[in-house]
Length: 208
Image 1 (cartoon, rainbow, N blue to C red):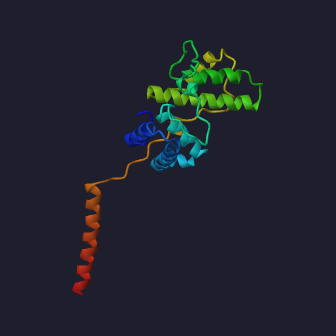
Image 2: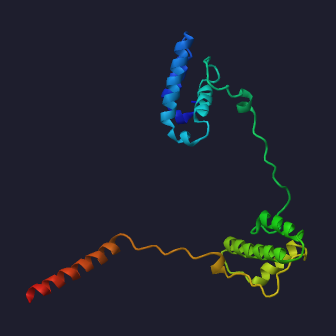
């Protein structure tokens, strides 16, 4: 099937109307199929040009072999047969894998900033992200001196931490996971104990 989301029955219907000789009847059948396709994929109603999208899909399902009076121009076959453009990928080794290439690019960008508060703020953000990446990758504590030294290496000494600015603690960078609430039997037992307490209280009141 060309578009499996419409199902095999729609595919059979489209294949059938290709065999209809009368053009008017073929057009009526196509409009009926469009209604069926719209009902099967209601999420497309939120898409701009909803009807246009359905007629394009009809042409695709028919493999562009359906001769009908479409209210919209048919999509170009070449666009669907053309290969997608290759995504350029940056070549070259990453010096520290746990930091990744994004950190290296951020450092290069920060180097070009003029000295001032903006450059200091960006450097602080980069250092904190470096520490977070280091902890996430290695699953262990890392001294701040290691991060600062790595910053110097990656920036060739052109970036440095502002005096008095501290790197965030690990617990601030990676918050602890929330504790799960007890489930199952333990919860049922606690609930049962509470019911027993209430029942015992009622019994004690009845004795007076």
